[in-house]
Image 1 (spheres, rainbow, N blue to C red):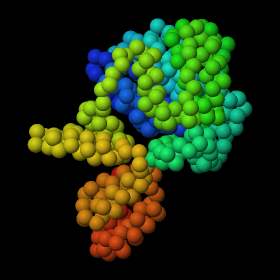
Image 2 (image 1 turned 135 degrees about the horizontal axis):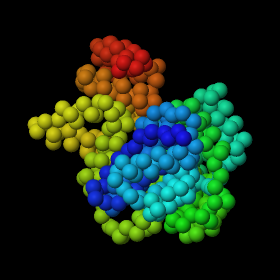
Image 3 (image 1 turned 180 degrees about the horizontal axis):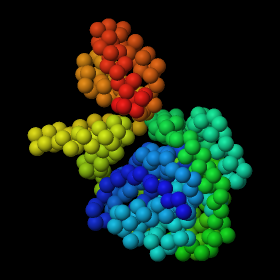
Image 4 (image 1 turned 180 degrees about the vertical axis):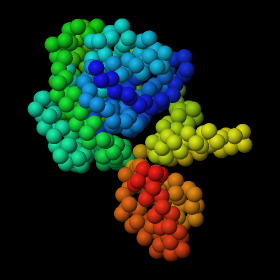
Length: 391
C-alpha cells in the first residue's frame, strides 16, 4: 500500500471542538476551494482542509488509489486527536468520503458529498486525460476548466474567485494530476452504496456537467441514510460557488446549533494567515513568526488581519492582479526589501518573468526611470534565484 503524505490547511476553530476534514476536487487547493465555507464553520468546529498529492501544499507522490487517499485522511484525523470526525468532499474529495464511509464507518460522524459520484466518468476517459496531461502539461486542463467547473455567469459575478481557482489548477503538478485521473479510473463503489450507514447529504449543482444531479441522487438513494440537495446556479465547485449555502448544509447535517454570529476578528486573522502563507510561502512566514517579539507582535497581527485577512481575501481581484498592483506601488515608493519579497510572491501568484519585465517597463514611465532601474536590478537577482530554486 502506498499511503500519500497530505499537506493540510488549518482554518482554525475551537481547540476542543469537533473536527471537520475537507477534501478538494481535482486541480484545486483546499485554501482556494474551501476558504469561504470554512469561515462559516470555525465558530463550531476545528476545520482542516487537505490537498491532493501535487496540489496546493502537498508534495508529489507515487501512484495511489482512492482507498489509499482515504487511509491518509484517517491519519490526519489521528494527528488531530479525533476518534470521530465530520467529513465533506467535492468531486474526488467526495469519492474519498465514500471510501471512508466504507472502510472506517466508526470514524465518520457525518458525510457531506458535493458534486461527486460513486463512479465518475469512464475509465478510458480518465486514462485519456492522464495521457494528455503527461504529453501536453496542465495547460489544456486550464483552458477547458471554466466551462467544466463553473455555472454560467459565475466568472462574471465572481472574477476573483474564478481566477484564483484557475491559478491553483495552473500550479498543479501534471504527473500528480495524471495519477489522480488514474485513481478515479479505478474507482467504482456503486454496488457498495447500500453498505454505507453514515448519515450522508449529497449536494448537487444544478449546472454541474461532470457530476450532474443524477449522480448525487444515485448516492442519496443508494446509502442507508441519505438525502439530496440540488443548488441552483451552481456548477462543479459548489464550495467556491455557494460557500454560505454549503457551510449551512454542513452545519445542519452535523447538528451544530443555529448561530447568528458574524465573522470575528479571529476568523479574519486565521483567513489572513492562510492567504499570507500561500502568497509568501511557509518558510518566509515561519521566519517572520519566529522573529516576533513583544515589541512587534501587535504589528504582525495587524498586518495579517488587515492586509492579508481583509484585503488579499477580497473576491474583487484575483491574486495575479493584486501582485501587479503591489509591485507597482513598492517600486513607486522605493520599498526595496518588500519589493524583493513580493517579486517572489508574484511568481507564486502566476506572474511570469516577462510579465514582471513589462510591469517594470510601465513603472519606468509612470513612477520614474531611476525607480525602474533599481527594480530591474533587484528583479534580476530575485527572479534568477527563484527560477533556480535558491530563492
